Image (cartoon, rainbow, N blue to C red; front, side, top):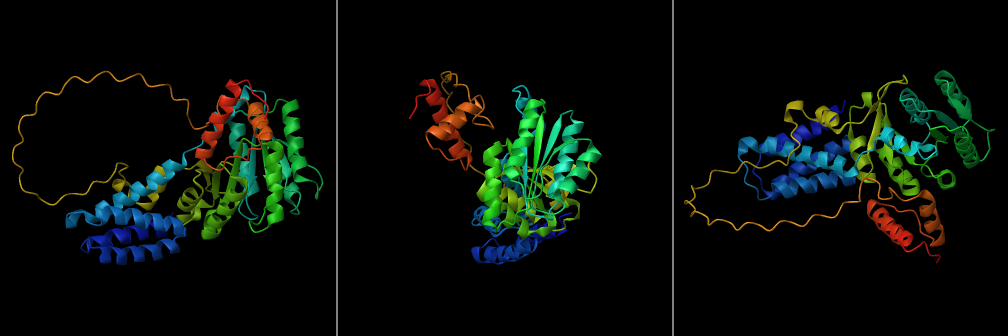
Length: 391
C-alpha cells in the first residue's frame, strides 16, 4: 500500500541530505517533491502546505549533514500527524449509544457517486452495527439508478435487516422520512440511508441530497470515495462537502491503493476525518482508519516519532558558566479554572427542538465550520437562559 507516496517522501529526504540548506537548493528539491506528490494523487493545496511547512523548518536552520535526512522525514511525519489530528475523529459506536436513551433513531446518510462502493460500504457499516447489537432499518433512497433497490434488498436479505423502499422515481426524501418514521414507531436504534450516486457536477441531483438531509436531519453524513480514483475522489469530496457538509469519509479499495494521496488530501481539503477504509469485498472487510497505520505504510515503522522534530545543532563554543540564580519567589496559587463545557460537539446538552426552533425563528443557516458551530451554540444557550424569547 502507498508505495508511490512512500517513495516521494523518501526521495525528498535524501535530496536534502545531498545539498546545503540554501533557499535555491531547497526550492529545487521541493519542486521535485511537488511532481512526485501530484503523481501520488495528493491535492495541490496539500502539496503547497507541505512545501511551506518544510521550507519554514529548513531555511536558515543549522543541521548536521548526517542528520538532515532524518530531520526532513520527521518534519513530514509531523505535518501528516497534525493534519489528521486537526480533522478530529468520530467514534460511531459511542455516538449511537449516546443518543440511544433519547428514544430517537441515529440517522446516517451515505453520499457519493456511482461506482465507488457506496451501497456496499453501507452494508458493511450495517454489519458492523448489527454485530454491536444495534437494531437497524435501511432506507432505499436511491430511486434513480436501475437495480439500486434490488442491490440494497439483496444486502439486507443476507444481513437479515429491514428495508424501507418505494418505487423507482419516488421522492428520495419521502423514502428516507418513511424509514425514520418506521424506526421511531418500532424503537429501532439506527437508520442508514442510501442515496443515488450523484455526479458532483449535477446541481439538480446535489439539491436532491440537500433536501434529504433537511427532511431527516441526519446525525452523521458519510462520503464514500474510491481510493483508486485519486484526485477525482478528492474533487468529489470537495464538491460534496461544499453542498452537504459531510462529517467524515469511507475510502474503498484501500488495500489496492499504491499511491496513498487520497486519504491525506480528503482530510486536508475537507477538515473531516476518514472513518473507515474498505479492504475487501466481504462484509467484515471494513476497518477503522488509523493514522499510525497510515504513517507506517508511508514511512518505515522505526522512523515514526510523533513528537516535534528538533534539528541537531552544529557544535558551538562552550558557554561561560552562568552565575548561581537567586531563589525564585513562591508563586501565588493559580485560580481554579472554570469548567470547560466545550468538547467534540458544541451543541451537546442543547435539546434538538431548541436548536431547530432557534434556527427557524432567527433564520440561521447551518454552520459551515467548527468556529461557526461554537458561536451558534453559545447564542442558543444565551437565548435559552433568557427564556427563549421570540424574535
